[in-house]
Image 1 (tube, rainbow, N blue to C red):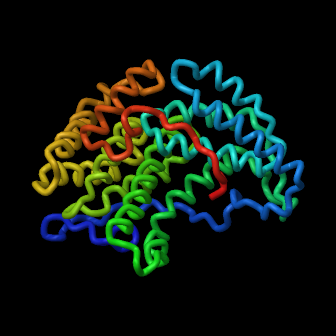
Image 2: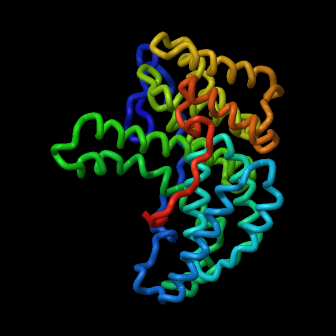
Image 3: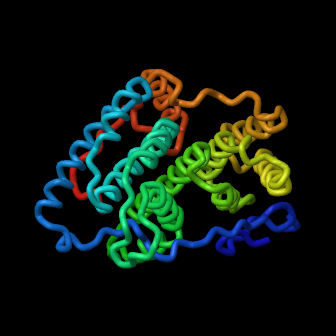
Length: 322
């Protein structure tokens, strides 16, 4: 049968039942898009630059050990405009995608921001719903989720002289960001920031190709299912879950997959069979040093988006709107 986007999911003899498709309303217009800088006064731009510097500094220091203290300072940031809030969301989002082991911590920060930060009226439509932190954050998730659809256009736009290695790097970077986004979406769902239907959409995307699976997608599938499986494994979604695990079982016996990933799939299958009882503790409950050590092990073991060398690179300068 055909999967999302019409890709063939394969399977033995091509006789598998169609993958259930949960329709997710596409994003019609970005509310996160920056209005041209010329529409902001010099004073507003200066204040926003100061806000961004302060935000970066706090995010670079933030860890599970000092979360409560620095989170309180973060919530005291002075958000005066929608542009300010979008800038903050971009920074938090980039950190969350680059540091997936701290996903629970960043999702917790987003929950607190959604409770504290102000909302802003729609500049173009006074009758529209106000722009809240939560709404802008979810738009950001949706935009990232749909970016894979524009990857080919990005590759086609590269200069003709671009080497295959450079093209592969662009594609790999986009793929890692997409997978990081899916993991963060899982953390936000666990914090009740997202509806369940988007989680099914993510799982369907990750289960897109059974015969020729991408290792990074399989690893992301296992980590996402470990994060959210218990929450979505209820009576109404049972048929969907049974279908997912039928396909995961088939993946676990695919000789084309590395043994590490086949074992990982089997662990998740066993986890469900055991009633989701043996989940590991989340990173937010561990000392930062321990999380860093695990990041190093994941990197050496081929983890797809662990922080390099176990360190947490600081947010750099430059235009966060790019």
